[in-house]
Amino acid sequence: MKWFYRCPSCAATYDIVPGRYLCDRCAKQQRTDRPLEGVLEVEWEGDANPDTLPLPVEKQWFPPIPVGNTPLWSPLRLRDEFDAPRLWIKDDTCNPSGSFKDRASFLVAAFARQFGVKEIVLASTGNAASSMAAVGAAAGIRIKVFLPEKAPLAKRIQVLQYGAELVTVNGTYDQAFDLSLEYSQRTGALSRNTAYNPLTIEGKKTVAFEIVDDLIKAGSAAADHVFVPVGDGVILAGVYRGFENLIKLGRIARMPTLWACQAEGSSAIARAFAAPGSGSDAFADPVPSATIADSISVDVPRNGVHALSKLTRYAGKTVVVSDDEILSGQKALSAGSGLFAEPSSSAVFSAWLKVRKSIPAEETCVLLITGSGLKDVQSAARGLGLAQ
Ligand SMILES: *Cc1c(COP(=O)(O)O)cnc(C)c1O
Image (tube, rainbow, N blue to C red; front, side, top):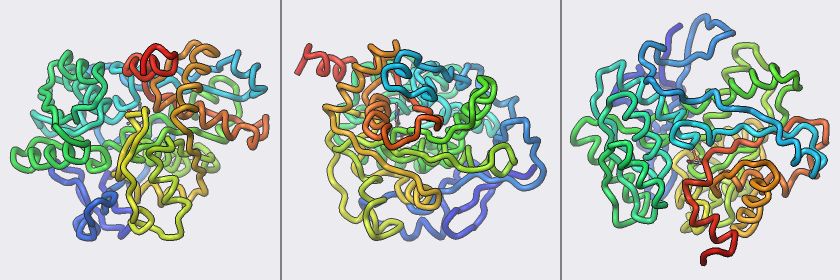
């Protein structure tokens, strides 16, 4: 098997080496306050063993920490309550740092080990930073993170607890993003910025493989619908990549319907999907984000153009939920299933509640729950009326 990066817009290919992030040609079209242009995908050529998970970094470089293989389980009381016999939860709160982001951090750290890279730098709204710090601690790689000051306390504490270096940015995530890129260009540290480093997308595809395998093991029909929380659109694109790989390998026959779940106060991808333009033009009018769901709160979605092209190609769907719906969904999910999810992931449950009647009962729905509720108890406290 030969692995390489491929630009989904212009089909240019590149070697997978440190320092390669975007497509040279397409990145030239970058405009300010727009999603990234030239986001690359990982691709392979040649025979792949259909029974193994294809990844561009070999197992010997994997960091010693158990990321992924999270439980897929049936929330029986929710199934009863909502008459949804084929509802499943993919519980990625069980990852070591408590979020889905560990999947991306894991592959980026494996790549760093393969090439002897000693330092990884990133900007984050919180979870990517705490995740990279955790995986970096296991792998023995120095981690430097740029976090906006409004990141929830638990996420900042995690970063420090895992021994990473924290730079608090008196500004937005976008400013943190620019500072971290500047640092990476100046020092040669590997950037783990979401979407910018193509391995962040590739690392997230593993969840699609697990969903397919676990549903088979459970004797269930294949997934018809997967509900995904969406901020920058990297998880969404990663899940699409996973299912694309599975189709390429002949493991599944067709793409499930992916539901991009967004908060009303941060819904750039849903708006772009509904807008007439395509590509970057669909993101011409950025709106400052305002939602309690910090992990999906972005002004300009970094992977917007790429994610939008996937939604369009596969006729995906978008759902937008309000902060009130997120908070009431968070409570209903916890009390009805025993799972305490952070607001970004409660948005997935709330989104499913909103559209579930449009889905035939015999179709299989998987809710991707990406982050633990303990990461942001302040928001839950608001939902419970314990805080403003
Ligand atoms: C980052 C994150 C998301 C959103 O992922 P994007 O790739 O930004 O769309 C959702 N849930 C959690 C818990 C996250 O940390």
